[in-house]
Amino acid sequence: MTEDFLFHCRVEKNLSPHTLKAYELDLNQFKQFISSNGKAIDIRQVDKQKLREYLQRLHETGKIKTVKRKIATLKALFNYLEFEDKIAVNPFRKMRIKIREPLVLPDALTLEEVKTLFQVVYRQKQQFEDRSTYAYKSIVRDISVLELLFATGIRVSELCHLKKEHVNLERKYIQVNGKGSRERIIQVCSEEIAAILEEYIELFHTGGDEGQIIYFFSNRLGRRLSEQSVRFMVKKYAGLADIRRSITPHTFRHTFATLLLEEGVDIRYIQQILGHSTITTTQIYTHISNPKQQEILATRHPRSKIAV
Picture (spheres, rainbow, N blue to C red):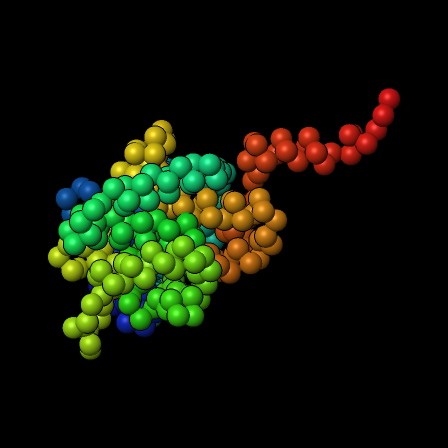
């Protein structure tokens, strides 16, 4: 049953490999739970009581976001089974499941921290005298990665799956394939960023790739740069910049959105650039940092116009 469902998700719904992997993990966990007494149970025999027991187990052991994802996976499975007439009654029918996720404000870098980080990486680049070494090529690639993360706010998976033909420096834009196979165009307007990307292309893309699928960012072996490599990269340079907190590639996405909002950019433009399907997702960035809040209250609050 689950194999048919996963086939449906891969072929008919065209879901991403990342989503399919998550579905498979969630379904395997559920199958282990309903067979926990050593006796396999047909998934078509699952009723509301068994679902409630599983939901209770999830709440005891999992984080809220993880629990919500696992429930969504099961709902998708049973909706499919009902639609295909493989079960008579969907056990999720008339089940009220409300999970309130606590609001966690995204952790963003300050503009000063971003400035320090880039000063550190460019200083490292300037120390190289021999530009033919792989170490020099590597620092140029790393700077290009960091610049593009901050300049566009793209997800690390989107960055790692950028293909060579998706980066157009002549017209200064990148073409991003986002969640749900939604494509979007993001302009790269900084001349400094365009310059480092040009240098990266000269060092890493030098002919011989006609007819091949070439990812824009690659590792030493010429393979696609992995998301994990980018995470290690960000952690490394954050340490060199003496940023004493956990920084991930997604932090650059948070920073991109937060700093644009603080500059007064309309949230709907930010939604479009980030590739959010709804404005609700983008609204998490509408918090105001403490320094910005202090500036607003000190300079714009009407109390300053009242003399007593």
